[in-house]
Length: 241
Image (cartoon, rainbow, N blue to C red; front, side):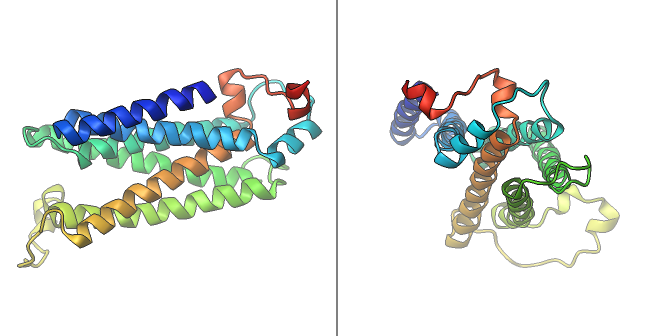
């Protein structure tokens, strides 16, 4: 995993340099996808090597058959959060040659991804608080993480709506004609790359990264990531030996 982190950070640096020199949309999209991937690996390394996780793992050496429900939910939330960031990068670095139909499909995919992340984060809260499986809501850390992820997701939805408005105006084209005709017309002009637009879009990306990072930690402490990857973790004492 450390080797993967080194490789990704070098790749990210090369892509960043190409992004500045070439100013190419494709490079920008790839650069926006590898960044969250490196961030996820770095958060996973920090979590797996932390003293709290090592102590907790050493106290529960007994093997558990199969992945628990919380692990499945956490794993789905982790992958959905990353895919959502990838989908957002396609919209943020949109090619001017993209047609209206392709743009609508990208927006639809992003909206479906947002709904998926919201549903999984709500499921994570219910599972960690013991509302789905009786007796599973005993870990205070998992409760805090799931609640924090749900809070970030709710904030992300509001920021996403704001990012749409400052980037493309009110989404009247996505509404039915009967409903869109009732919205009063406005003379506000959408200014590309304005200070307000940069602030909201950057905040939208930042909260998305926080959701991803928290999902990585939540996935690890829920038994999802190690079990899903088939990794046999050992304590720090054994590793040094």
